[in-house]
Length: 228
Ligand code: CA
Image (cartoon, rainbow, N blue to C red; front, side, top):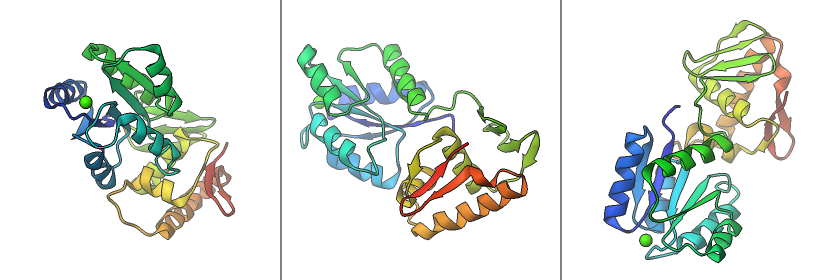
């Protein structure tokens, strides 16, 4: 879980290559697209953790696509950093108005870019720099893949662990089945929505056996919420 997936959308080959090298060296898992069409395909295959999106693209502009993404209920939480050669204040405001999580003006230093990406990932809960996620008496260790409640081990399957990791890093928010499928299983997995229910039921059963089954709540008509 340490290597966050970054989707780079940039039409200029040299810049795309530069970004690819810098990000891979920083330990990220990188996918590239040269336009929005390519980016959409890439997302359909594998959901990134963040999009580095160039403003000027040949098909749809980065700003327009960013606006579309932020209106899409299943994609709006995907962090976007807009890249542009423009630097006026007006453009910055526009970039942030369409919902971009951050904004960088070319040319920028690779170090600054990596730092900004990490900051956005940290803010959105996508960067697990700490190997332990602690919520009250629950401790989830992403190094040893163990969950414990009040000091007792809670044995989980890999899928239940991933679900729990997602819930614990996104507490108090309601997620519907599609969002959980995208975030926990990824878009490559073409699964039925009831798969989510099956795994939630199993997860709850294990949690209940350890005295904390009430943490995963059903929000009738919407989905599920992790709430301590
Ligand atoms: Ca461009």
